[in-house]
Image (tube, rainbow, N blue to C red; front, side):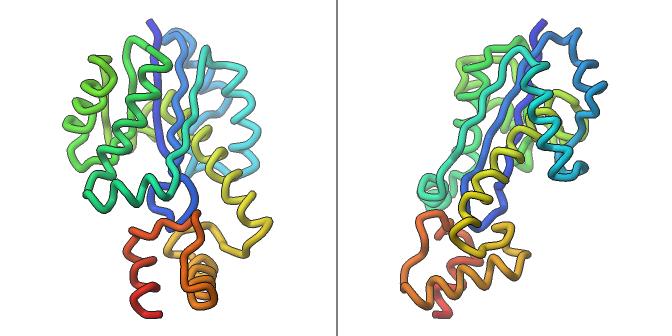
Length: 206
């Protein structure tokens, strides 16, 4: 029986991509991930995540990583369809990996509804959707590590050109960067999510 785990990284960020990652492997091999020390990416250092990233890819049968651009995110937020956008991309991962059962980390307040949507969008695949799935199921933890490392690499590439911090609204370096950039250029960089409330606030105030 093949099991799949799917998670995202960067959903709450003001800038950069939203990354969706999935891994699949035989159910009997799940303990191999546990032995590697795989757990929710938020509970690991960036160095540990990078080491585990390589080990996970070597251990699983298959994996798939996809990125959602800020422009695509903005278009969905305007229509109040961000959860739907994420469900579409998760369904894409489900279809690619084609496991017997896929466990997903739900961004919807109603995990069952989110799971049903992914199942529908993926042509009827069996989906188990939960809040905090990344800390409950090792296969989702593995996906969370792949998503987080991929997202971090995207931010690191941007950091070579701009001093933009982590990308999150709670990071003063990020807020300062976005504010100063807009004041100077009167437009937002393509990698900033213009639909985000903190970004709209900066536009309104300047």
